[in-house]
Image 1 (cartoon, rainbow over the protein chains, first blue to last red):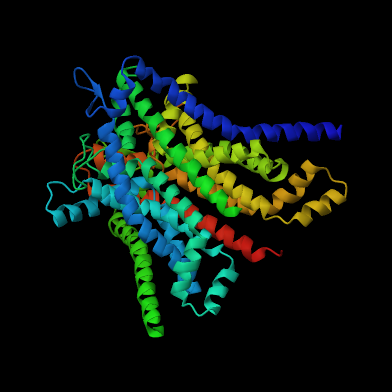
Image 2 (image 1 turned 120 degrees about the horizontal axis):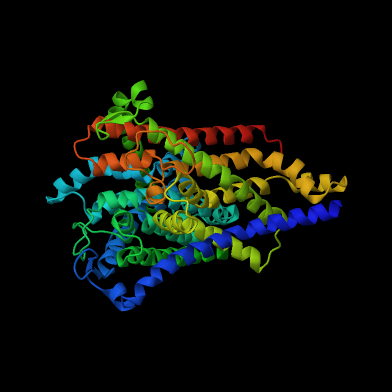
Length: 288
Length: 283
């Protein structure tokens, strides 16, 4: 009787373990079900490479290239800002800062991670936008750059915590060996510790980028929402995520417009799936 | 030469320190601005009254209650699911292909953009299951979203329970499940709670997943059942700051401060619980 109960419980828990796989598959199915319907009427290449996104025009045009480039510009901008800052911060926390300062910095980074995206967007609109506007003499402060700066600060906590993990898990003997040979602490850091932690650092960067691509509310409020081909980083753009969030409320269920937003969701799901998959591979390679 | 590398080190460390300052200063700035401009708006009326005059006056009571409802419903679904999955991965799973698949699935769930969760919730819960735009649909969407956070932290909590505890229990003839239930889980509980609170705090601030699944633009009454729409704090802040013209800034900052206050106090509870376990741990 007891064995029987144990077996049942084990099976139930096993089933539970599969729930996560089920959810990933369900997400894919429900995005694909509606997203792929679009391609009954729109050609795939017109969707992926079309240069005009104007779903309400007559005839409507569903080219996501400007949106994709918008996401790309904002993501690249955020990456350029966040990678050096995040890495420096992680090295400082992991290697240099005295204990009390480390605790303060870590708490600060955790707080930054905890601020909801909508609040970052709100404060960014009120504070960061005007600064960008005046600094570059622009007609509007809501540009790709504004979004990039805000997103960089949303990606940094993810990067810092994973990088710091990677840096502190470098065996102490490496560091001691290098110091014993007469290298300075800084030489040890960039010649020994960073190379040894590199796969963890790569994973951290990728996960940070994944976070940036998927970010929605802050980016919708800060990038100015103009679905045109971005020409400079100081122009308003619109990202893939913001398009879904901004337009879903206005669509008619079952219309081409509605399906096209699911198709964008499918594209986003694909992008983040790949990024996370490779980031996870990089992290696991480290552990071996 | 020796001096040169010493100077280099000093410059490098100064730059690294500067970077750390650049990361931390905005956090402090954001908090200061929120407190300075938001605090004057917060009063008992603000917290307990319905919004009036197209949200340009009155309080944010229904938004607070809506967020609390969503968070409570989401966690009551996600917690059992997440903890059981973690138990499977730590206690039962063998190192094989399936286990790796589950781990990859968890990593990917954590990486799916929040707005894609919104689409998924719309497709599955609102339309396919006919829940309509409701607390149930929104909470289930949020639950799936916070699942990876809960699983990851529960896994860590379970793994930190020493093997010898399990072995001692098994050697006394206790079955595997009872060992887990009576020995492993109670010891891992504080860690699990910490993780879940962090998961909760994340969902409390999320806007994109509830946009199409539950959030009501303006609904000055409390939800009656889980099949009702409701207002939510993050969405209310979005509406106040972008959709409604001529809102007093104090109202916006007040709403933002309440939201951040809620999220931070949840985080603070988690940090205190964590510190408490660390100090009590004897192994």
